[in-house]
Image (cartoon, rainbow, N blue to C red; front, side):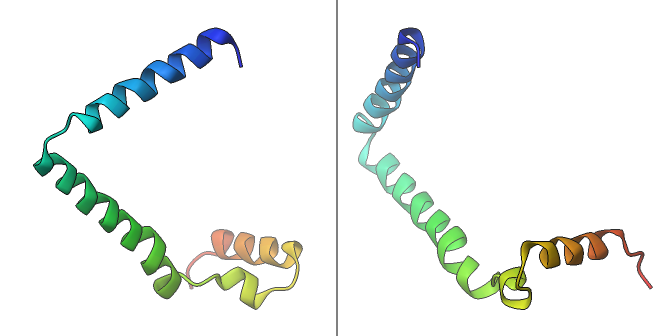
Length: 77
């Protein structure tokens, strides 16, 4: 990574860090609610509603690939 890129990343980090640090109490509470909702949506709901279907039904990557290709290219009957 070049020095210029590293400096730009530091400036971006500093911008957001100072923005969140100087945010009002109300703004922090809103961001906390947003982060909790994202965790629930992507962490918890994925476990219950989106099981790993391909890993449980097929043994090899080739079988998984063949199944996905068949589903994508097979016209509806």
